Length: 411
Image 1 (cartoon, rainbow, N blue to C red):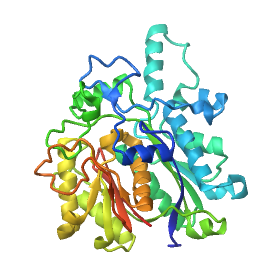
Image 2 (spheres, helix red, strand yellow):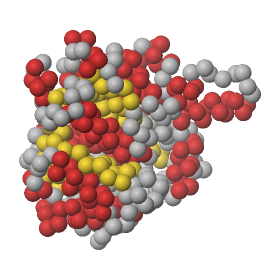
Image 3 (tube, one colour):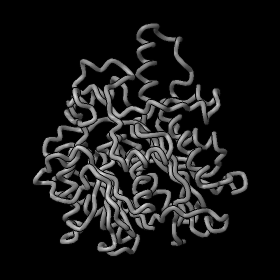
Image 4 (cartoon, rainbow, N blue to C red):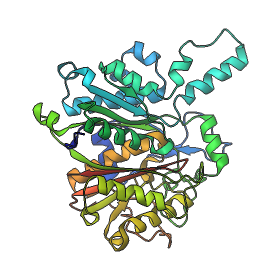
């Protein structure tokens, strides 16, 4: 197996804090919140009526009208971010054998907006009045397919679907595919547009969404004693990954290295994390081992940090288990405090934030951390961004079903 380095050469993002990497990262460093009252529909009677929506997203600026009509919002976001990532990477796809480029883009939910709208229409009008594009617009792997269609990528095309670890798992698989020699370049990440009536109500009935409806920007508060659930978000994150030799051959700028990946499963519950945090800890140490990086070389963790009671406690415990006496020396922060929980996109968007922290030597903050939870006793970079030169950083993603993925990036 070819074990040469895998590098990041391009990135693209759609988020409630901006629809370019530059805008997104600038707002992250400033500690801004993308949360507000839901505008997509009237959620006033819901348990939670707040979300981190993307308001300044114009897919027509990058995607043709014909293609837009054939895509659900989650696919539009993926294509939009992928185009930015490819342009950022300076990747001329026709000049680089398109069959040696893979596309791995997943979504935890898929086109729920289309599904809900079309089912309402079916109930109202009955059979024979449906939209012929409803099924292909809805299924979750269509994000990967539409990216390939719009960019002309003819190599392997698939989507890893693993709840909130989706984006991270697609990036992890990209590394494996490149190092196996199956692809030279992989367009990888996650996307989600699930701020819909059914999804918001379902999460609300589960009791995992924040009910701070009168203070949206204060609602996502990872590791805070008074946290009461996550704020649902939407967006997409796409990375261009390639073998170092391929990147050098075409003169690409290397933004970071994807040094290691760690993947485990709690094998315990469909929704509750293992309270011992054992497999989450094992994912982190596995990523370090895969990258052959000593734990003391890791300076930062972009935490999963959902703002739910159980997840934040368990992640803290897992970090203690993985790093031991080194845990208090780590800088940690949660991007979800600002952009909410973007479900299948979260691992990819947070990977982008991690790469930017490495590049700039700046740890983005965890906002709304007013009263630290005694059980969450590490350095979560409250409120203010902090300068810190780091050589290696982890990005954690933990999904329903106990699906854990840690990505280790290096300068």
